[in-house]
Image 1 (cartoon, rainbow, N blue to C red):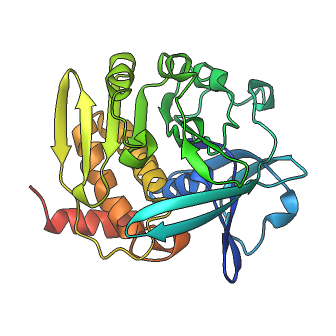
Image 2 (cartoon, helix red, strand yellow):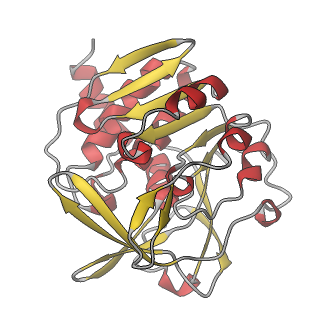
Length: 275
């Protein structure tokens, strides 16, 4: 098992119906297109899986009567989210006993569903975290809003990489210092401005690949999967961030998952834009 993504797959509503999304979906598809064998552990109503989206991905669905469902509204580059259903949680007990040491594990909660203890369940793996689902809750209308990350230290003591966005921080950068103290590598994604890598006591600005944005949904998840894969290959967080910036920039240039590039597209771009 090369790449294991853990988290809810989602129904992302739009005027014509819905598409399947969630961190686990975007990350696993990215891993697959980067040449890795991808696996997803999730909870959902199995009947929603259709159209071959997960072809070639080892999809393990723990049944749930509900599937986590979002509606995203974008206004001047800012996203407002509404959540109408949440599937059952994913716990340590849901991990099959033979899943001992995937090369890479990504914890991608989107609605408080991932058991924080899972971060320590893969001591022989490269563990990365996209914490957005631990950093948000919703009001009675279903509108999503930021909240403090209550189990941050439990997760970060066991994880090697944390990737989060400016949006995840909800305008409050004060928790970032604590995240940096407890995690070897922290990456703050900054949309069209690229990202900042916090590593070994320094901050490194990594410039973006210019993109013509069509749909930014899932870009941070695509970035994280690409970052972890390149970090596994090179051991260099700065090279991994540059690679991931390119992968994520391609992904926003088409709707949904359709913009996630192949490995060859990324390598060709990097070959012609070396620094």
